[in-house]
Image (cartoon, rainbow, N blue to C red; front, side):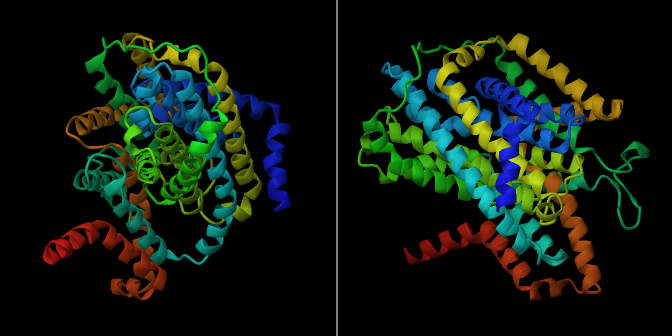
Amino acid sequence: MLEALQSMGSVILDPYLVLLIVVTTVLGVIIGVLPGLGATTGAALLLPFTLTMSPVHAITALATIYVSATFAGSITAILINTPGTAAAAATTFDGYPLAQRGEAGRALGIAVVSSTIGGIFSVIVLCIAAPMLAQVAYEFRPPEYFALTVFGLSMLASISAGGAVKNLIGGIFGVWVATIGAEPATGIERFMFGNYELYEGLSFVPVFIGLFAMSELLVQSKIAHHVADTISMKAVKLPTREDYKRIWKTVLRSCGIGTFIGVLPAEGATVASMIGYAEARRWSKNKKEFGKGAIEGIAGAEAANNAATGGAMVPTMVLGIPGSGTTAVILVGLMVHGLRPGPYLFTEQVDKVYQIFGAMLLANIVFMIMGLYAAKAFARISLVPTPILWPVVFALSVIGAYALSTSLLDVWIVLIFGVIGFFARRHGFSVAPIAVGLILGEMVETNLQNSLKMFEGDWWLIFTQPLAALFLVLAFLGLFGPVIFSRIVRQRD
């Protein structure tokens, strides 16, 4: 434990790392306040530019973008009723009405404090829970990992607002994309169509840039001339003593909810913020104020969505199962830099792990300072004209993809998956399940093959392993539980 604290404390002794955290926090806040970008798009754009960094610096940059952009979405949610990120959607319910009453500074103060508490709480839980879960993961063999991955895929049903069926279709499509290339065990070519540049499969980086950044560019092109009305604000105001008395229970409750939701495979800050808001309303004595400027609603949503950031890093780093769309990008960053996610990460490279944790903790403090003293300035960034912003995003997408391996094929992959992502969004599909399915697809195939080798082809023996059976039952309940439960209720009625 002492060594872990020393590794976390060493972050502030590295001037370059501290500067990197400050710079990427500023970048993350800018990305968060620009409606349409968000943490996942920002991390996907930044990923190619981290390849020349050391592993700790690279993952720190991506994680800092994650936590700061998640918070920054609340700035535009409160001031222009347009959430900068999907995770801030619930903040608009009460943040904007409170700002319309002339209390924008108070609303932002509540959001900043709640976000910081939620983020710090989740990082502390991450520091404690990740090593403990790693000890359990040591007992995992291919059957357990296969079942866990199936459970993670089943959780795609609720990863976003696209609907369970559409999310599962997206996840299955992602798994199919993961099969492109030569089959690892036999070398049989799959879906290569004679292009031997695809022999090792599609690179995650250009696929993610296309799905998140390029598709968002195409979506935003339809509202290129939209102008938002901004509410004026003098300064951010810290919550008063009376405010703290009203929100402290809500903040603590949302910290727990957000962290728990974040830990669940394939869930994320958006789901956490909605549940945090709903529970804040459920337990409030002032239910009639919700939707009209209730500070409990702002605190519940913001504490939950930022608490989910640290929680989502737990399955990402310990099990290699992304806890959200953004952690899917971070997981790719871990793999690209040779940090193998899993229990061995906490024994072979434990100092690097805790340096990343320390950097996330520092990032929460930095964005709190920026939120309190520079929110008004950052809010003006949201007024950057879309015809100027999105050509820059397009250029960064193409440059980042090409720089990965100096291959025009990667640029084509970005463009193709940008179009795929655009049409998916247009028809109500979310691109996050596709990204998660792409990552989990390889894990499903590899662990299933290894399990079949263990049991000499007798696949049903997977169910004789207690942990594997548990995960498969949970996957079944996650997919069919709501249907079974609704039928039971109808029969009783």
